[in-house]
Image (cartoon, rainbow, N blue to C red; front, side):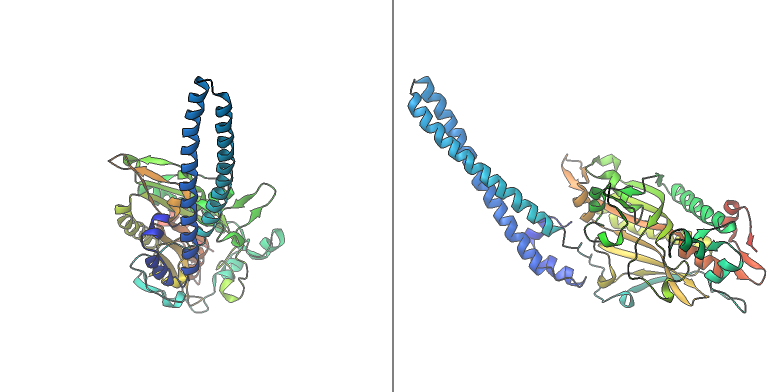
Length: 423
């Protein structure tokens, strides 16, 4: 959530910056500032009434000491009237503050200066490409056909048990999933990230804290009886570890990693681009999350991007890194880098990771602060990234490593899988 200070200091800058995200912020900014003026006026009036009450209370005491009970009763009547007015003002203040907060959460995060305008994915900037060229054998198959051929992923069985988008991994397919999860976690912990195992259901406060609510409520699975949400990413529970926390300066940075299954409704998704593992309602993902001082967060972002790139290189896959344009960025992000793998059999790029800096946007919603060297509390910066999301990694691994004799497992994964080929 944007801070009121930023809106007061330069509202037009906020409006112009959000145009890069194709968002017309002017009506909301105008309303927020008007509500803020109204709230502050109510606070000033309320403070004046409380001061008058305090003054009259002292007068009542003096009158009682002088034995002037009738006059004291008259003053008490004035105090009662002021208390009634104070109560009305408090009600107005609370309603205004609630309306102000409800408007504030409608404003997306402001993109950083590196972000260029654009309508969508076609306007994203390719900042780097790497990995080996892929040469497929004659008669190469897409991953969903390979999964059927080698009986390692059963999409039809998942439909029977739950529905489309909930595959069943079998045999070496299940072991490959487990191997990738452990491999990614081991790489992350070796890079200094502390592993945590969070819940996969969160409450409404957690969803609000990281910005999924109210913006993405329709994309989340909701257990209505208990009012819990299935996590769309480990970012949500892991970042909420720090909700309502004030960190000491020497406790920053915080670097955490976690594996969770992820759940996304993906309403309206259909067609060839969602076939097989390309888009699922339930999938496995390993996440990295950081809490940083503002002055260090962009160096941390570069470090996270380099770390994710190292994972892709270790798997020997062809990739590219994109810096998202304003029109393709999330509601909460100030800057996002996407990683995509080349699917040679499908002849298309598959997104496998987003690495983002949210600056103070999430921290403001979370009330996440740190105490600086002067003892003052400051909003921290939060960052997160997929390291990595499994489905499309598996799709690329299966397709790009297929041979006439089977699917070759990258050497670095063999200690985790216990086998070097799927055949």
